[in-house]
Image (cartoon, rainbow, N blue to C red; front, side, top):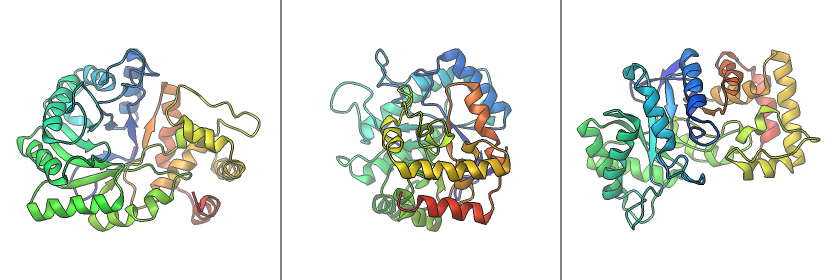
Length: 321
């Protein structure tokens, strides 16, 4: 596994990040432990979760993923693992049960630390913006967590370029901890959202970038074909896959990815991930897995180097997405 710095920080992370959304949802505790062990064996030291994972599942309350990860962490050497989690979603009843207010953040971080069974979080991210809370209140609360040692670095997820820039400006002016990382939705089938403006901001401000859904919710694994379009209901991103399976152009892109994969003798997923890793703005794409086999299918992507011709073919085929 290859490693790189997270943005302008000195934190070293693996070039692939293991997403833990499946834990406590489509992967039970035993399977999750096996996936985590396999990831660590493959050199992945970076794990991303969120407090709301997986509140949407019937019978769950949120925090299931963090709790499983916390049990596993107790069996490992904590300092060797980079843990990222997120705050923003609804976690309890009442008007302060969600959001990015100081009240919510201060309670949510304590809950996450308890579930993770650790006394610090390496990367604490605001899951998405909160228009009801002033940015300076959110950033001051996050700064307090950094100063206390409960959080090492902070990041943002799903922020538009203007809001991310404003947040960075507030941090600079008020001398608060600043966002060192952005987690955007970015893949061959979702390019404009990041490339239009966010990419330039991240490169200029030296933010790390850890894209989620880099395989377009499984579409870029090649599992869907023109003849087999049944959407997997146990995956997140079902709406995205539904759109892609009904888009004739998407299959043309897959054909090109398959051609490139065949030339390099690798799975199609490697091509999609290698395309992201070839972008100097990208730090570590987030890969999800419900089984060890799914994880093992993608970890080799860090060893694939696409040619300029390969990248140009993919860029031309996905222009406009």
